[in-house]
Image 1 (cartoon, protein in one colour):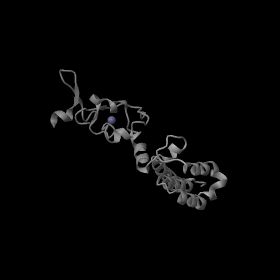
Image 2 (spheres, protein in one colour):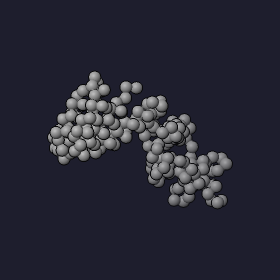
Image 3 (cartoon, protein in one colour):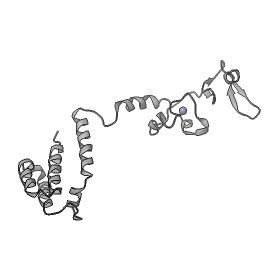
Image 4 (tube, protein in one colour):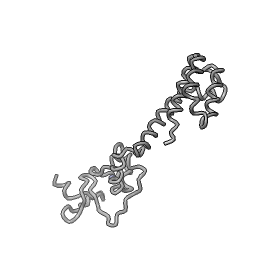
Length: 177
Ligand SMILES: [Zn+2]
């Protein structure tokens, strides 16, 4: 894979020795574990040796960045990314990919309009599946259907739309409920 994870971990151990002011231990460590990488990582090995001349509070670049504790977070990210590519996995969870495939068939512009949400539509629940579908394209509907706001059921000849005097339309099923 040509992964640099091992080198980065070795380098981090060297940095931790330097942070603890264990200069001679750091030199021994780098001779044993960093020097095998000389052909590809010579520049960074030289920086690691230069680091021994600076204390961990230094404001001097690039040693300030080497002492940065956030390097551990970068190592975590690299470990994950390398693990994914080693196992031929995507960094995206498979469950959300599968869910998004289904959600993209349901998404309508109304899903994100608060006054038009449908109680039976998973995407209209903007806190859960709706947020997962946020970046998906809208589904293409050839035929429109009228959906009752209260029951969430489709209005058709078996569940007819009823018009109230104020102009709002609900399905017949709601008036029987
Ligand atoms: Zn919806």
